[in-house]
Length: 126
Length: 148
Image 1: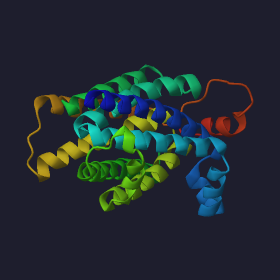
Image 2 (image 1 turned 90 degrees about the horizontal axis):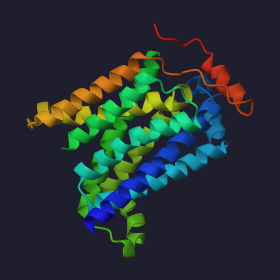
Image 3 (image 1 turned 90 degrees about the vertical axis):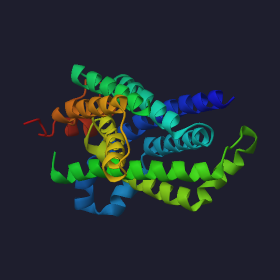
């Protein structure tokens, strides 16, 4: 039972955080460079513009789902399984999602990097 | 990439690592949450360690969304993995923990992966996707930020 809960939490975390990352990245590209906006119009303009972007709000909700599935997982499994396993899978899932949904150019360099990081994170848990 | 942008990336690493650690410590205090008592999961945010962890994760979210406003997701995300490396190295040099060969290999792989991404451009030009959302994105993509 413990294993099932742990892996269900990992699956939910990877799915939710991939969706959330894509939504947030999309939203923030629409908002524009936050640093520039802050300099020109102040921090309130930045916050206002972010909250007025629906995909940003959805992205934060997705983050919250990912966060709670992680909390749930942590209450059942070991930190040394849950965090690296979900993080490791998240790097690969996100590279895929960024390519498909955000049309980022995930060239050979970034694919290799995503795989290296995913493998490295998995090894850190061993 | 300016110094300020590297600071934001460093903020992502520091805040997410510290936040996750505190969260994990707090949840261990609380014990197992069963599916039948999910409301207690919502109440767990009132545990002091968990609360501080969440505040740190909010700081992380601010840095993270800021970074996403000027860099690709596939650039920002791998960078965050450096946090694992720092935790391991802090454990090694501050608390004299032993790092197994497998973990050293993990550290090397993460560092190599992050190095590969960081050596490239932070924002790549988009493939043309029509004009629905093109004007914000394309103006970013054509900004003169290129690798040296």
